[in-house]
Length: 255
Image: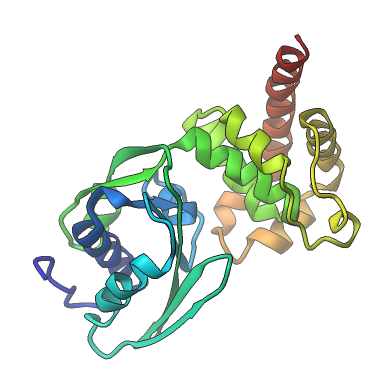
């Protein structure tokens, strides 16, 4: 192990160490995604998860041993591993901290290089170049996740990727996800696929569900109060812009 374990354990210090160690062991085969990907882009939303996709693998069984070995390097940590058809999940409890590493495998995933320097410097660690999911693909997955879960945190991540970072959704990824919907929402349980046009209509209607109260209720555990003021207007504006962008894609598909 060439990356020293932090002297002071905080959630962010542990996150950074894990990100660096996973990158060291799996190299470019480990692609970070989800909330921690956005944290590296200075997103203020907190998260307790490290989400990864590993490529190019056929089975999650191919990565289990390597990941568990890394987790076992954490002094005093209790590790709990579960795996099902959806993902490999490893819960880590150490001192007062509990976090989860969730991993899946793909044959390929569009990725880009990203520095951890901004977050690493805050916890007195050296930055490292790692691989993260390409933001256009990440945005399409977030849009699909919102469609299947209807969570405010997904809308916030969409706002951050689209409005703040400036990424546009990857059409192929979005269409693939819309063609295989897996939702636990009662009214969508029987919906197995959706056209892009129907998805745009669903997204447009969501503006009516966004209010200062709903934003505060769902996002106050994840964002500081200063980030919440006026956020409902920012989310609605983002949806408007996204709807216009996606409507243009719908026209292109028809042609």
